[in-house]
Image 1 (cartoon, rainbow, N blue to C red):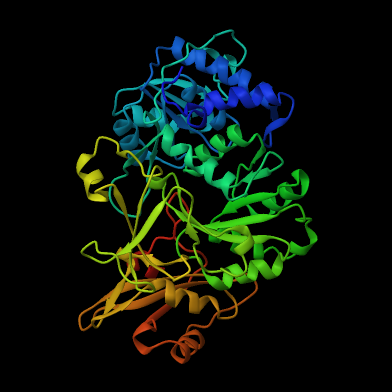
Image 2: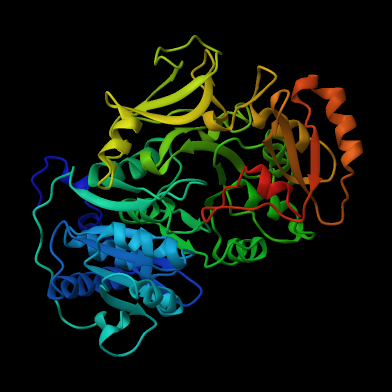
Length: 508
């Protein structure tokens, strides 16, 4: 089976075997369409894994997964892991040339795709070599579901903890996508951290509203196998759907990005939903507005609202606020999680003093193996075992870290440095603001000046002149935007990050 002395904690499919044997009748997965016990989940995984081997997929070869949130994602993930293949989970929103580029780069042996996305895949295949398809919701020989019941027993692979296990393509706002290669050892870190910090246990009802095509998907699958809890998968990012699911399934823990919490606060009858089961809500992302954290805590005082920080390249956790510190450390991204080293360094790589801003770098078993077939990009990111995040932060004397923004986002106006997050946090305190982003506008005299785009809450209005007057009264002059635009929404990447681009944000 495996030749690592601590293999039981590294290999998700083998851990699932043990959990299914221990609690076969417990519900493992709940979706809109179906519920699966651990026994049913594991039976399907074994059948699919055997069929993958029958289809010629060998250990170390790559199997693509192009699906919206559904039960087929954990089934595909566990089945590929079962035979030692590398799961390549692709964003279901990829289209056209972007999808074709990722498919070419991934060099897949087989692709599992939803029938709703089949047209996009076939269009991509017109200009590249086609690969074998299994179709979720399809008929005939390519049907994914028809491989659930057939007796196909997978031959166990010989695995190492540092074998490639997963590839996820980073979206980014510029540049070509890069495949982040994570090992079995990398993926074992998240369940360990959740266990050590007491975030989840076997009684947890875990809600997953974020796209499972990103790092959250495989890590909650690993945690599902390890912890033996129940995973509730939401098929859309919709605040009402989330609230209804929490109420119906008694969800106890969920995580999401700031925009989802903003949308939740915008639900007019929020107090009318029974969210009493929820113990912990984690706001994940980069610079999360402190006013948003406070507003959600005020609206849902029974929920511990915590913040964490990480990257796809760090599988993903780097820091996290412990639940018992949720109120005292609100606004912090937390302390380094178990097994992880973090430093704040200057441009020369030297560690800075407490309270001083610098780049966040990290080292440990959570750091990716590298970018798929991109040695130069890997060497630029990982230097001497340390991964350079490109994010700016600071550490206080008590060991808690604070995120200040991206290095690339820093705006230099008239020779003075401004981190957009600082200005954004002030804008969030203005009445009626639901969302904002601050960006750089080229300027012939000062090099750059600040701009801000604002989205008003439903039923509210935000006046540009009035907001400018408020900012002038509360910020240094060089931090006040030269221009503010009010928009109905902000442009986003496929992973939900707001695009900080002046031309896009200023266009009407």
